[in-house]
Image (cartoon, rainbow, N blue to C red; front, side, top):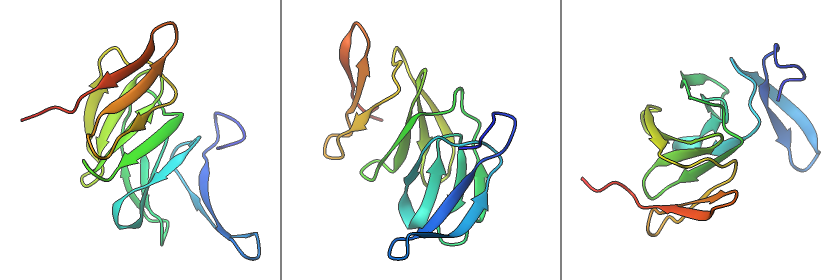
Length: 134
């Protein structure tokens, strides 16, 4: 994340053996987290998608609220953002698909076998969302 809200953040690359930073990819936002998706694409919690190999900016997705946690579900090829609401993005096209109604949580999990989304909600418990069937 950026040091101050008015500055931009970055995704930093580290050599796991030497434990040194080898690269820093500047972003158009200040992420708090990221998830590795298909084809070495990385989605940040503030909606910037980058190529994890080169740092090239692939997309800037406008989200209703920046996420705290991101979950990539390979089964449905979607990113799920835990925040004041759960936002959903298509990992192939980087298109915003919508939000889960009544889901307000900063954490979540997705079962890749059933594509069910589990969202802990204060004073409610765990809400479970089933995937849309078309």
